[in-house]
Length: 359
Ligand SMILES: [Zn+2]
Image (cartoon, rainbow, N blue to C red; front, side):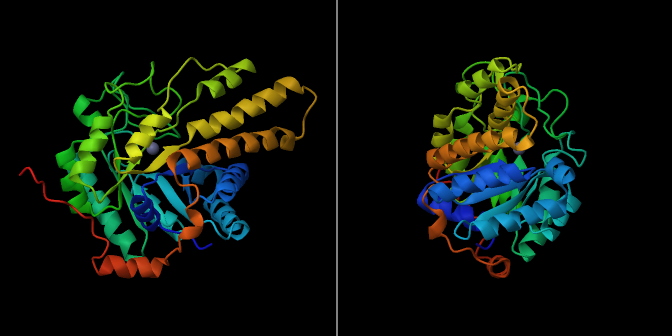
């Protein structure tokens, strides 16, 4: 099926009250498994590539893999999204390679590690949104800096993440500032800081409201009911996967991710895109460890990768079902980028901002 923009997909998700998992891709096996899961349960797909993925596989390979996925799964709409774009060049070169959505993460400066000022963030995100919308491409912005409320530190993944100590104010998106940011930048989706972080080590205990600030999601959704919220670092890091990984020689200290029921609560309060990478990595790596341990004479990479794909497919299907996106793919008719551009020009896609009733 034709590629879909993030905006059209999340508008559909909002209308029907579901969330869409966004899975990171770096290689063919991930694309095959994510798409096979989507096909089984008729779920629309967000494939996202970080700068690290683009460097690993190359832009041409990534673009061609997604083209292949479209040809193999004609009834599944696919959004190809740039994860954590650090500047204009990253976002615009993604668009040149067929991405239908870009994240301009101006919460950090272009070095992808220094927390940026609000003014810097607003101005670069507004510039990217202005240009991207002219060609119909969607934009996700980020306000607040991702990091742990337990440690007061940012996290690094694929070379991206805040360095140094972060204040509580930086680690939690301010709802008033979110309104100003969306109004100024006209982003289609907003990633918020609420205590989630990238990687496997998100929480040192099962998270409660103190370290996973779901109240921030609710407060922002109340102020911005028309904006699609994005939860980053939202792998659940299931205990069963940690155990499997460790049973076959892995060394992962006990850790907690974001519980599925918290994500589902977020979906009831405006969360439409849920970023998941660690769970996918862990599902595949555990199988590679298992085969390496159980079949020590095995040297055919496919014998390691087929069980990895099967495990990833199972995980993705679970998330499509848990977030409610299963069953929706065939109901969506993707609009062309030209049609989306026309709607942006006409102001039809301007963010809906409700004036506070309490004012
Ligand atoms: Zn992220």
